[in-house]
Length: 154
Image 1: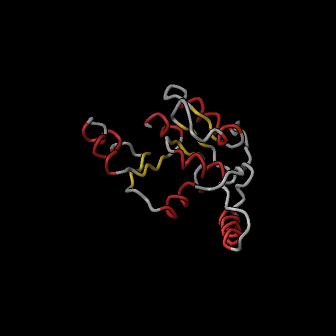
Image 2 (image 1 turned 180 degrees about the vertical axis):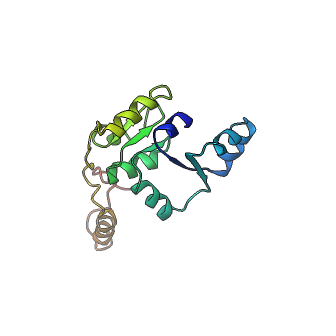
Image 3 (image 1 turned 60 degrees about the vertical axis):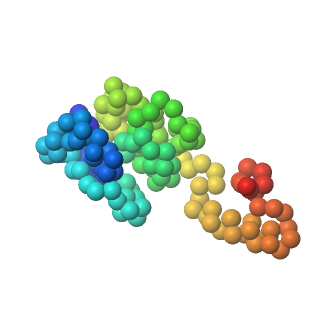
């Protein structure tokens, strides 16, 4: 994070357990001393998405953030070697990076050398309407609601 903060200022919403672990390992004072790293309390969804939507890039290990950045078209660097959301890598702006590869990936984002990506099919903001329509058909005696892949929902 300190290396990344040399490239651009960072906002880091810190979960209480993460804050405790940082303190236990003696890392919290080092992060707090970095003028380009702003440690903030955990944010609610709307506040967090406002932060993400204005970001040049997101650095995360969260699957949910991988999805949100893909939807928003924000470059995402995921510090993992696998993801349970591979569509965010194949179609979106998400890339899996190692700690050692983070600097080079961040430099690529800042140069503008990052794929634009696209939203996966069905990520059009109308999921609630489709769910409500499906449930309405089911109550009306039509087909059972499906999970989106054509399978009955459980």
